[in-house]
Image (cartoon, rainbow, N blue to C red):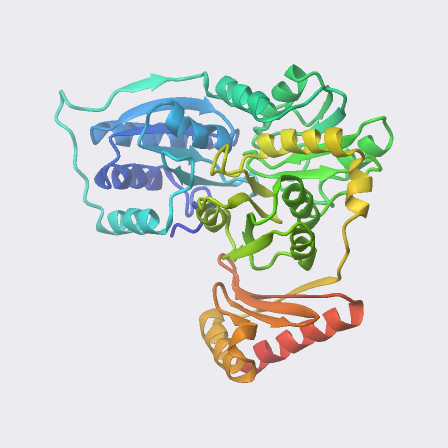
Length: 439
């Protein structure tokens, strides 16, 4: 049930107060004596948080209620409140009819694979232990976590306040970005700033299509850049001063280039563009590829020589600061980069641009299809060309392709990239042939 980013889905179907209660008892069964509970602005988040808190206390677990906060605020708040775990009620960038749960450890990292397995086993067993009347857990409120987050953001960057920034919060929880940039002296204009879980301003996920208003405002003002968050503010995407939306690989390359030194590494999933490899190679650094999912990036970022980790979806991790994807931190880091290195558009122009192709194949038998694809690819290519870390990735001298089952939909996803258009098309067609043959 619990994927790399928790569990999410339609309220009243998959996500119910009963599931919140069961999850709370599972946390208690797995040894959590204290849990900090936070929630996003969705209309159903308060009732799910109430259900979880009541169930935790009934099992003898002390609860800190963080109220309405960003996911990275809650993740960092596990340590700040001295809790054993964090439970965030959110469906991240999903539509308003959805909700869900994310679990966080004391380090600020999402629950890893072993802890997720323990939670799933406890959910399956559904063995609930109730505390005696005089041993139930306590509940207290802590409304200081966002202020602590803002303090941490201001300490993490060196910003003179010379930038003008447009921040599109998407009616979500990214207010810490605005507060931090204002405190640092920046000129800040906001869009969709009122938290509203119905997301009336734009769909919650920040993409080039959903951020057209942000692009237009930045292009038609003197703003130096634009920032966009998703509903729970763990993601951050950006717009340069011309009003052009940066894709995730470009942001990953710029952040990586800004932080790495010779011999250091960056962690990113295996569907990351060649442009990141090129940037790191030019600086004597290297890319460590992970499974898709920010929890895997965070795990790799624990290594001493990994100084940055990111996913092109908009999740950015600076392990020296925190192991959670922190959208407000990414926003502040990007403003710092622009102040230090100049125009975001000019920095972007220094990057190579390679054609990337994506498509999907619908199938109700994605596991069987992937087994067939894996077997055929292993027979066709040399071992040093193949990675089966997450799906199957095939390396060529002039490009690569990836065949990977969707974690949430009845789809097999195909991605191909090369250094010219024709070769990218060829590699995608090659990947598609293997999938079609396995169906």
